[in-house]
Length: 389
Image (cartoon, rainbow, N blue to C red; front, side, top):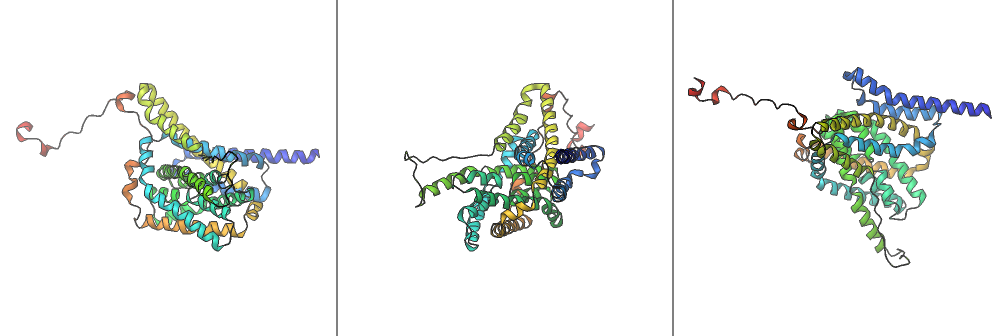
C-alpha cells in the first residue's frame, strides 16, 4: 500500500513539473530567441503533449486539472483585456452585428433540422447547436437550466464541443496559412467558427498577436448573445404545451453570463480611462497591463496542456456516435461558410479595419511627460518663393 502511494506521489510530482515546464519554457525561449516565434506553435504542441501524456501515463492530477481549467481560462481572457483599448474593442465587436445574428440563427436552425434527421434528443440537439453558434461550453451551461436539460444531455453536448475545440486548436492555424489568411482574416474566422473562447484564444495566439486581438474581441462580443438567446429560450419553454407552471404562478427567467466577459471589459476600461487621470503614474499602470497580457498568453499555453490531459478515451466513448456526428457536421458546414465568406470578401474588410483592432493602451505624450515630436517640415514646393529667399 505504501509502495503504490509512493508511485502515485511520484507521478503527481512529475506531472506538476511537466506543467511548470510547459508554462516556463515558451516564456524563456521567447525572451532569448524571439525570432523563433515560439508562441506560434506552442499552443498546439501543448495540447498534443497533454493528450499523449494522458494516453501513455494517465493524468494523476485529473481532479485538480478538471476543476482548474475553467477558472484559469477565464482569468487568461480577463488578462487579455489588460492592454486593450476599450473604444477599439467596442467598435470591433459592434461592427459584426449583422453576421453575428445571421450566424447564431443559422447554427440553431440548421442544428435543430440536422438533429431531427439523426433522431437525437431535442435538448441535446439544442445544446450542441447553441454551443456551436455562440461560445461553446459557456453557452451550454447558460442554456441547460433554462430548457431543464438532464445531466446526460449536458454531458453529451459538453463532451462533443470539448473534443471539437481540441481539434480546432490543431487544424485551424495550418488551414489559415494554407488559404493565405492575414491576421485580421484569421482572427475573424476563428472567432466565428470555433466554439469556446479559450480555443479561439489558443488558435489565434498560434497565428499571431494581431489575430489574437481580433479573435478575442469578436468572440467576446458574440458571447454576449448568451443573454438574448437565453431569454428567448425561457419564453419558448413557457409557451410549450408541456410547460409546468410554478407554484406561485410566476415564471422566472435566469440569465447566466460568463464572469470573464464583464471582467474583460472592466480590465480594458481601466487601462483605457484611468492612466490619463493618474499623470506620470499612469505609465506604470499601462506597463502592468502589458505584463498581465503577456502572463496570460503563457498561462493559456499551460491551460491548453491541461485541456489535452483531460481528454481521455472514456470521454470519447461518452459522446457516442450521433451527437458527435451532429456536432462535426454542424461545425464543418458553418466553419466552411464563414471561411468562404471571409475569403471571398462577403464579410467586408472595412468592418474590422486596422484602426479598429484593439491596440495596447498608450499614455498621451503630455501625460507621460514625453516631449511631442516636432512637426515635419513642409515640402519646399509648398513654400512661396519669396519666403525661401
